[in-house]
Image 1: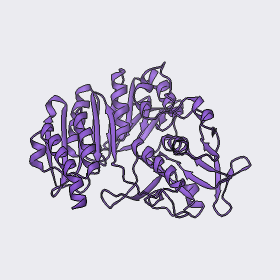
Image 2 (image 1 turned 90 degrees about the vertical axis):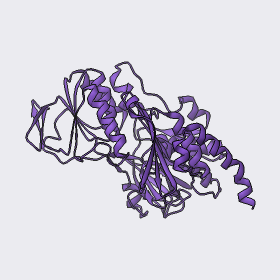
Image 3 (image 1 turned 135 degrees about the vertical axis):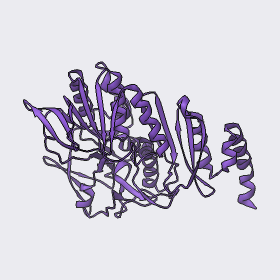
Image 4 (image 1 turned 30 degrees about the vertical axis):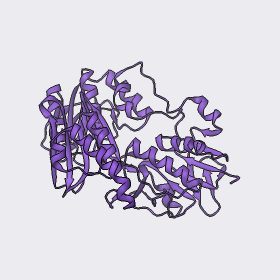
Length: 417
């Protein structure tokens, strides 16, 4: 492949794809294109340590020497205007083209916009990039009151961080509970209780009618019930939109993201897609998903590299996620939609517990708060295809470990029997 592999997007997925190509022995050209003028960096810390510490620096995904040492042609600050799939080349914004033999789209996602009077005021921000985090950190230093629109992971991580830094924080969520798409009601209720004990005010089943401004900057959020909430900064965290425009304009199939098969290939096989922008039928549930997580991005990137090199195994990584909200480390493994029963281990009152979700007798996934051992064991169980009975779960971690060991020992016999 004389033109090699071009990767559009230099986040977790794109950087891992470039690294995995070299790790798997690919020796052709690798071009990694990023639209930020930064060395690719870890995004999870942006909503936590970075915005509360004026001295915090971004954490590089790889050191600068990695790119030159691995013969990866990293091109920061570059935007792609168009994919010419037939000619296998990219049109670069401002002029020029880049040919490719294989193209990997790791274009990620962007914050969902909110159509709201006053949204254009200074001090109304979202968090997705390092530049956004720098702005939030700067605004936080001179803000007494902060309103956060959206009770998902990003909004709650920021709420806990800014409250700990001494700000008065109000979270407004349109649904009747926090983390509506992400976790079970019991986990969401626990998170709410802990945040409220910290002093974060949380309004659910509430929307914002408009934002008020003063001298060009935001000064207050007015709720649908008419309450005026002073705010020198308003953070919008109501979800993200996958960046599919390049792919769609090139004639690639789109379905809540860039539609891919189990090998990360799009409807044009020479073009692959990975990470937040990719949607696919998940092997674990059979349902259509688009997963927004570092783990999913890196696992898909590794498989995409193997696909480029001619390996044919399908995607089979067990999905897992995490979020740090105040003194709560939330860890989730599996996909729990469709569950009809659950078992709780641990003590919510001690801020350490896990919920095991079942559909019938099948373990779908585990949600944990400050019980990392349960999470790691859950990853092993789901990875092995082992569904312990609810009674075994209720007996505790030692019983689960023994049951998994027995299952793993018997598995070769079942496979050959």
